[in-house]
Length: 253
Image 1: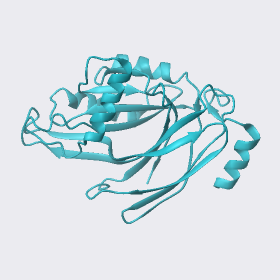
Image 2: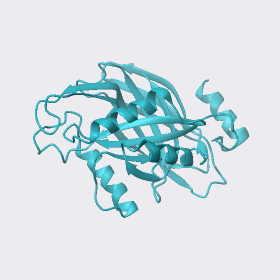
Image 3: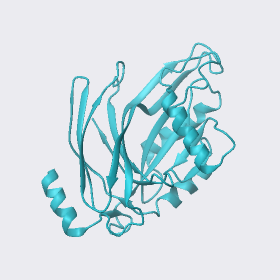
Image 4: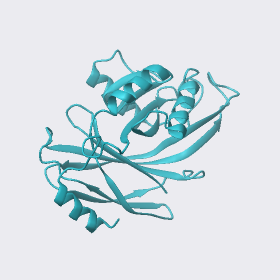
């Protein structure tokens, strides 16, 4: 569907919502796993995230997953090749917002609403089911293309004139479909670890006024070493006050 036609549709119908005006369409639910290859408790959570991604086990939910590798384990014997202080800072923001007792791994944040131990499948399923009952804005990704190290995408956000919030912050991520490491030191020494949708780039693309149709043309640079097993592009909207995710979409490159 072309961007111009999408704009026309959005203007005719107002806010297009998953779960409200489209009850038969699965609601996107964003799962952010804060993990580390230096943490011996993390591999079960990594496997659970892969299960959620591959099997999509929760009815009426489209699970969009992100593996965000924190860097505070890096000084304890093994430097995680996917770690970044950016993800540590994002996890700390969640901790500050929810008044939690510090940060830990593995930690799963569901839709920016629910925080839990990343390997707890029962609690994760319950949180996903609750999150899937919340309507979401239907982000549209189009004209996605990769040219060497550059990835471009056109993002369209429908108007939501009756929404409680007036604006949201747009984030765009590039992730590895899959990534693997053989860990030589630290708590996981000697183990081969596998990850899904490992975030390599996370860019804040500015505030979106939800009272009218909004579009963004985003250009991202793929870092060296990324994409050996394919890439994904994930876009999501975050309420700047609550941290709740109000829209999300994913596209494989």
